[in-house]
Image 1 (tube, rainbow, N blue to C red):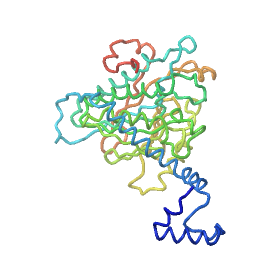
Image 2: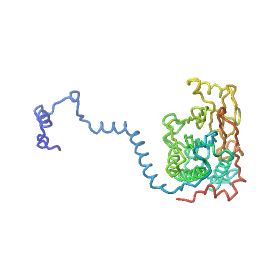
Image 3: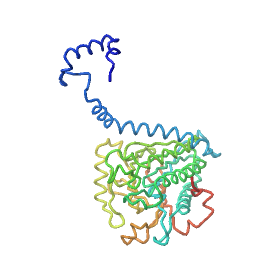
Image 4: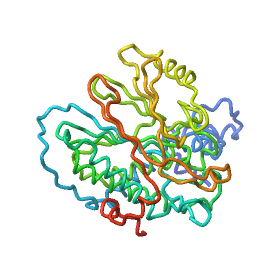
Length: 382
C-alpha cells in the first residue's frame, strides 16, 4: 500500500494524489499520459524489447573482463629478430583456416580415421609449420593475413548432443589450439592480421537453420574473442572481429571477399560439379554494386570441404578451401569414405591477388608425428 501522507509531502505528487481522491479514482486510462496502471505489462514489454541488446552488451563486457584475468600472461610474446620495421612491405601471405571441426572426436572404429584431441592438434600444427616456412626468403618484406573462416568446432548442428565433445569443451579446445598457432606465427612474421567469420557448425541453438540475422552470434565469435584476449601480449598481431557475415580486406591494389560459404556466396558442391557460370554471375552481382576501383578480385569460401582454385572468365579468382576433418559419420552415411584434407595458403603482391599458392596437405599418417606437439600442444584438460 502507498502511504498518502508521504506523497503529500511533495507538492506536485500531493496535488495529483488529492485530485485522484476527490474523483474517487474515477479516471480513464486514455487520459493518463505519464502513468500506466498496468506497470507489470509495460515492464515486461520493455524487457522483451531490450533483452537482445542488453544481453549482447553485457555478454561481451563480462567476456572481456574474464578474458583479461584468465588469459593474462598466459601467452608470452616470443622473441623474433631479423625484421626491419622500415623495410617496405612487398608481399602478403594469406591463410584461410576453415572447417577445422575441433572437438569432433571421431572414433576410428566407427569412421575411416580417428580425429580427436591428438589428431586435431597435430593437423593444425602441420598447417602452422608450413605457413611459417612458406617462402621464408622474403619474410622481411612480408605480412600475414590469417582468417578464421568458420566451422572452427564440430558443434551440435544436427541437434545431437552426442555429436563430438560437449560444446564448452569444444570452445576451450579451439581457443587453446588457435592461441598457440597465432603465437607461433607471431615469431615468424613482423605483422599478422587475424580476422574471423562464423560458419554453420559454429551456430548456437538460437539459429536452428541457416543464420540470416546476426550470424555473428555464434561460437566462432566467442572463440575468436578468446584467442584475441589470450594473445593480447603479442604486439605485432591485430584482430578484427566484424559483425558482417563476410570479411573484406585489401592486399596492395587488390580486394578480397571471404565468407564461410553457407550464406552470402554459394559455390554449390564442387565435389560433384563446378558451375563456373553461376559463380561468375554471383561475382558480377556483388561487384556491380561497387565502383570499378573497389571491385573484388578474389573470393574465398570454405564449407564444401573440397579444395579448388578457379580463374573465372571475368578475371576474378575463386578459392574453395579444404578441411582438417576426416570423413565423419554423416559423410560415411552418404558413402563418403575419403576426402582431401588441408588448407590453402597463397602469396599476394602488387598486381596479383594470387601469386604463388600451395594447398597444405594433411593426412592420417602425418598426424602420427609426435614432434608436432612441440608446435601445437594438444588440449590437456581444464
